[in-house]
Amino acid sequence: MQPADQQRLLADVQAFCEALREHEELCYVEHRFNDKLVPLAKKHNILGMPVPVEYGGRGADTVTYAKALARIGQEGTGVRTFFSGHTSIGQYPIMTWGSDEQKRQFLPPSCKGEKILAFGLTEPDAGSNPLEMTSTYERKGDHYVLNGVKYLISNAGIANVIVMFAYSKENRRISAFIIDMDQPGVQREDLLAKCGMPTANTGMYSLTNYKCPLANMLGPEGDGFRIAMGTLVSGRLSVAAGCLGVIEDCLIESIRYAKERTQHGKAIGKHQLVQEHLAAIEMARLTSEAVVMKAAEAKDAAAADPGNAELKVRSEMLAAQAKLHASNAAWDAADHAVQLFGGRGWSTLYRPGRHLMDVRVCRIYEGTDEILKLKIAAALLGGKEYEAYK
Image: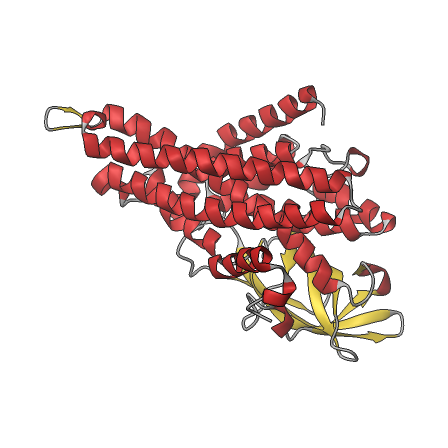
């Protein structure tokens, strides 16, 4: 992406964030989905940031997209989660494994905001191990019949199209499908009992004898597990970038508050233990920015040389490391910010408390802390031979 194009995209993201904030603050207090998010994202043309221009997107490289997600992450993990669901794990598998016909059918309308996307992998009893999923498919003439339940899916209640994974009844191999959610056989339910992200849409859905056209299988039959795992690399990097934004906002808010709030006759920023909190947040920001940008650069390098297995492995490892580090750093930074704010920190009327509640999920979705640690350790020891979760 050319520098001028990058600057225009990041300027559009900034304008979107400024326009969204007031409404996001209101929706958060009222615990309701932010219905202004999609219209404003559509207005500022940021619903297909990394999608190639020929398919209606902005053509952003990974580094630029990561910077955009970091800025969006400042507005809240719920806001950034929408983009991860729609773009990083919704549009991405179609961009990467879709046929030209599938790309032309689904990507342009998703970039225009005419179709919202989601990623349907997790099930009630299949989280960290997708191989335990129970969703099934079988071919019946000119279509596939799908049955199953997907759970804790970002954008599930608002998505028009979901990339979904299911087992073959014949050979137990996983395949990927592009599901039109407006067809018969679909039931969905919003999940509202969440610890955070009240302005984001999280839901579950079930398919009952759902008829999926043969043309809507994504990638070769039986290749679903590889597609899912490849997509999660994109998702992990998007979470890491968003967590960087959370840390940045915690720092901005904490510096401002430390200068404005007075106790014991002086601004609290002059107290040594308050400065300790600020220093901790800054170190979280600095280290997270370094690892996120390094992971983004590695992903761009791997994309530029798709036949290079070494670059691919490095990219996947750095995405896991970035997600593990940044999600934990964001949790710690939000905790420091809440402590700095004191009693006001323990309130959804102030941003640090919202960040603390929202960012906790980032240590769970797109790969739990535990799974990522095992992945990193196994790679250091020599690879698949040392995988602890076979």
